[in-house]
Image 1 (cartoon, rainbow, N blue to C red):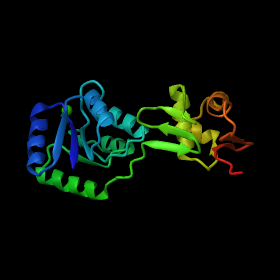
Image 2: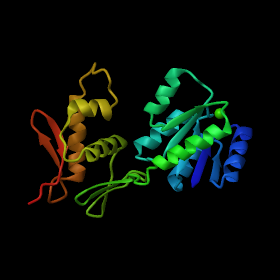
Image 3: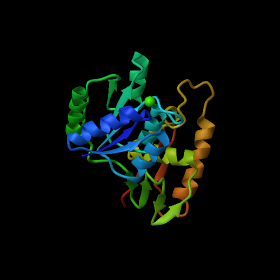
Image 4: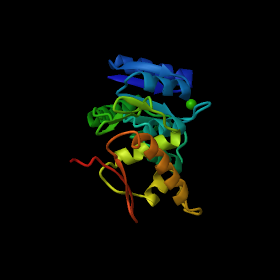
Amino acid sequence: MRILIIEDEKKVARALKEGLEAENYQVTLAPTGEEGFFLVNAETFDLVILDLMLPGRDGLEVLTTLRKRGLETPVLILTARDAVEDRVLGLDSGADDYLIKPFAFSELLARIRTLSRRGRADQVLRLKLADLDVDLVTHKVRRSSQVLDLTPKEFDLLEYLLRHQGHVVSREMLAREVWQETVRATPLDNVIDVHIARLRRKIDDPFETHLLKTVRGVGFVLREDKP
Ligand code: CA
């Protein structure tokens, strides 16, 4: 089992590495969020142990970005901050479990065993519909092996629609989930429509079959209509 530890405190990181290696885990250390982020994208781990307080890109930021990109490796958060809000925030951001520092090593081992049993071997790193293929790690979008050039927002929009393929998605859902607009002070409908139109121009217009459909009065759906 391969474990990535993202922790800036050298003493803590080294102690964890030695302890876990003694238990026959393979351990890689990353002293910064950036390095951890790079390693997670470059290699495959079975578990990520993530310290929240990191210099530069902090733990929550790393976690949120990873989850957005579809990474489903279990993440165990280590935090000195024991405020309830922080824990909730961590779990909301996609952490599977957390430990408050200082913790007993035996407790860490128990949590690791639980997480590895739960496992998530079926990682979703690609999303597909018909000949449309989206790589969530490299952000490459292809249709009929043709590489399509999407803006980051168009990519997020496509990813959301693909995750809900076959189901109608409303503008309200898109505003909330893709634009992260919790309070709809300014209606995003026009912005959403413009992005949908641009996305359609890229993923559908050059191709024979169209996948992105408008459901009048309701929203949009990404679906392959079988002849
Ligand atoms: Ca730290």
